[in-house]
Amino acid sequence: MIQSLRNRFAHINGWRGVFVNFILGSIAVLGHAPFYAWPITIVSFAFFMIRLDGVQAREKSVKAGFWCGFGFGFGYFLFGFYWIGSAFIARGAGYVAIMPFAILLFCAGLSLFWAIASAAYVKLTYSGRKEILASGAMRAGIFSSVIFIAEFARGHVFGGFPWNLPGYVFAAGKPVSQIASYVGIYGVSALVLFLSAAVSILVSERKFIPFYICATVFLGVVWFGNTRLNSAPIESTKYVEGVKLRIVHANIAQKDKFDPEKYVQTVERYFDLTMSAGLEGITHVIWPEGAVPGLMFEDAGLMYALESRLRSAPRAIGLEAPPVFISQTLRAERKLGQRTVYYNAAAAVSFPPHEPYLVSAYYDKQKLVPFGEHMPGGALAEKMGLKALSTALETISPGRSGIMPRLPGLPPVSLQICYEIVFPGFTPKLVGVGREKPEWILNLSNDSWYGNSAGPYQHINQARYRAIEQGLPVIRSTSGGISGVIDSYGRQLFSRDLAENGVLDVKLPKTLRGVAYNIGFNLKIFLLILCVLISCALGIRRARMLHFT
Image (cartoon, rainbow, N blue to C red):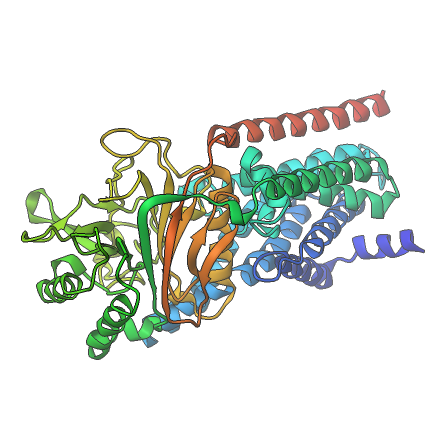
């Protein structure tokens, strides 16, 4: 009976087949934040493989495989990234009309990666015999490999968009996530895909060995993660001496930040939180990205008001200078030919006694959000008058890699603005003029674009994975998202949620030495998966040749 149901499900075609593929992709999103229902994702992927096997047995059409993958991917990405629409709404009525077209085109573009992978699966698993599928183990290897390669390409091609990779269905800071300290998020994603393929073979062919192998590996990963976390209880966390941070967390709607009439109100909200009780003993005050729109450090009135407040603040014994101020700001730079370019930047402002305030070197954001911070099309987009969502400017320029300032009074840091932190391996090995190893990550973000949706929860989960991969604590200050302190195991030590207003007065955890993961492993695992794909494809080809001879 089960086999009969499986066959009926696999062979649904026409518009009903398109609908089934779309629904499977939509359901698969439930594994990601904030739900973390990862078994649903694994089962959805498994039944997607069964659907592709149905295409193979029914018509062996690469084209049909392409559209099967496109339908699944479209549902997966549309329901995974629906919250992007909130940014268009926050930007104003003029952007709402283009919102559905932009989101649909964006998700369709991402779906092409899965569509091409699915077409390749149908092509490579052809057994040479009508309505007879190739070996289950071979198909499982090819399915896992082609989808992995598709997701790897999505994370790298055209600048990359590695958001909601399959591995993120396991919440950071929990046992399974700890294996990322060795294999990174791409390794965790490979585990999800191979486990899904094994479940598919178990359901469709009642073959237990692939499932037993994958389940054993999975249980080993859980054991490793539990052992790692139990060996480092939160209570044993060590902190950097002489550093106490105030993370300012204000819940202000994005549309209010763009309202000129509410500019003063927005600034005063941040000032009030900054100066709230407990400021004595604070060495650094951190504001998030987008706290104050525009060229904040060039606003003389705002900087004077900030300086006067911080200089008049009570200080603990032994602290001669006011707290150092750290924030994101837009930065303008005049180029040759009188052309002005703009950067999304971050810097620190210190207030030496009896001297003018000093602005540190700037860090300019390197990974820019398409449509949000720059318009694809460059000069053509500018001539058309198209402006980025996050500013009133046509475009923001990317910063140069390797330029990372040293923040006064703090260990070497890797500054990462907004979605830069979702890129595995983005954290540099060495930072600053002295080429020192970074000892922590500072992530300044603005999640208020996305309101009370899944977006901010997905963002913080990915930030926590960077902490695990790099063995570095993450200090996160965000507007409208989740601010807090993340230790080197991806655990949230302190946090403020979306709807909260307030501050977090926290110490800076020390770095964790001895993490095995590095960006080179991403390429190694890609090559390993490629070898699996080639081996399985050659195995099926050899079986096909033996059949015909």
